Image: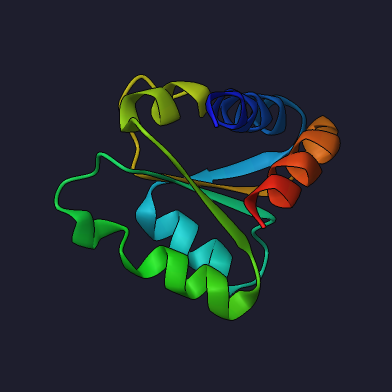
Length: 108
């Protein structure tokens, strides 16, 4: 499990530099609705939880893998932000394609 979380952060960092990511609940929601998200990551420690509650359901509807990470500050850091973020979606995998494939497989 711990390994999966590290892998998820690594995938975000690689996709950020070699592909494209969206940050924040609104941007992530749009990317899911448009069907452009390849992988969605939400933080468990978000308050209030209503901010991201709709995201896993949307992902399920669209057949997009959604994974949780424990902390929004770590999620923000891996997305290249100096502030915490509630959610990140990977739009273009870039060089993280293999990593994302592994994450999606282990999430099933």
